[in-house]
Length: 406
Image 1 (cartoon, rainbow, N blue to C red):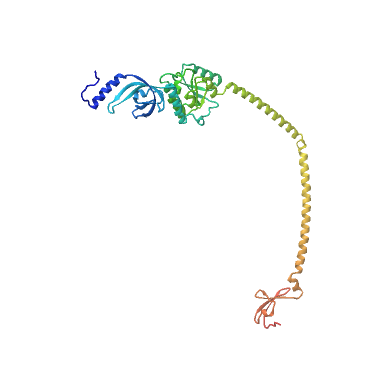
Image 2: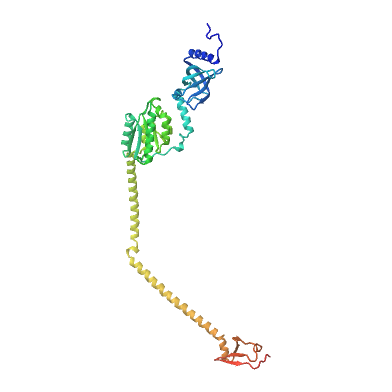
């Protein structure tokens, strides 16, 4: 018996018949293939192609299913897809409506973790140069962990024994299960906000959890936790699981400790070791000061034993006598210099006096001036001129009546 009527059908009618047959025959099917031509629509739906060496199949994953994916589908990823075949009437083609998608080779969780690491690394979350140093002597630590787990007891006991000066502020959160990642991130963000506002200054934030399976530690591999740790205004120490467990929280934190107690040791000094070191330093300082004082005392004794300190006035009187001797010699030298200077002045004065024009006048000579100018030639005056004649004693004023230039 034929599946289709023998009468003429419209395209819509034929497509509807095919849709009923295909979807009825393949309500659920597993397909092994490689993803290609992947598109994420703004609606949140995923459209891609499943292919092997000889054929390809269109596939769609609706938004509600896509939100539950543990990894990011990419072209080239080998997957197992479970879904039902459907026919899309407007185009007349069939497609696989995917309800479950698993990567082959890697588990979904492992692949999702690898992809998240790649994403955060590209954003610079793991760069060593952004890691901040831990405080040397912390006074207040924020602790993010479960209030009932073994980690909180180990951490508080280690703080009490190692560095009791520190105040530990606990932000109790779940550390595994649904919603635990959001609680951890919120606690870190809250501590950072309180620190930045000045309401609760912190020296460091310690995120801690004891050991467990990969599923138990999954909360510390969530992107929301990585974002909170990266954005923290306070240095973060991550101590999640055991030494072999390396979470994304460990990679983003400023310091990674292999256990919660190791985290306490990383962020605090040992008070007993510090006190012992201070005691040793005090002993060394005391010994050095004693040696220094002994040397200074010996030097003082040597200086005090000198004659200048035993009979200080003797030295003063010797100096006074030397001063008097030098003053007497200085006065004698000055007097001798003055006498020599007087003799030289007298000799020079005598020579100057002998060269004085006035001495020539004493011998009967005279000097004649006309209008203040010395007359040296008879041609320099004319009859009627008035001249003044300087004599050895006094002067004569005359009027020229005649001249003889010869």
